[in-house]
Image (cartoon, rainbow, N blue to C red; front, side, top):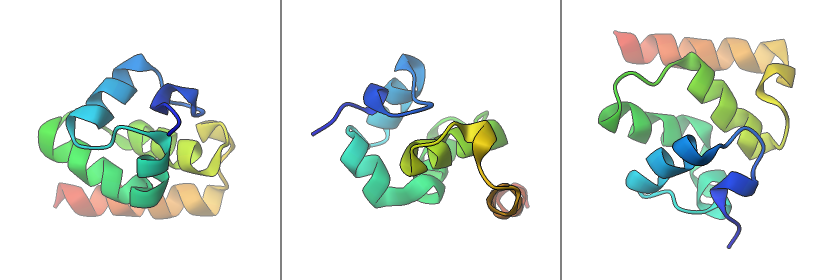
Amino acid sequence: MAELTSMMNIGKAMAKKLDSVGIGSAEELVRSGAEQAFLKLKERYPNVCLVHLYALEGAVCNVEFNSLPESRKKELKEFSDFLKR
């Protein structure tokens, strides 16, 4: 299994947070998807924000988070906004 830190956008701090919510490998993150991983992080770390969600999506898609298509960023923002309600 590949380490989380081998993924784009995932540093040691993010990998530690992901591991604390049960996502301990790159494969587990890809399997769970960015939104589900973000939900788990949000429950434990309420201060995670939209940029974290973008970083997770970038990791899953193997792209820099700022290179995500605008349409996908919009979907992720809507998801994040929905969680704030």
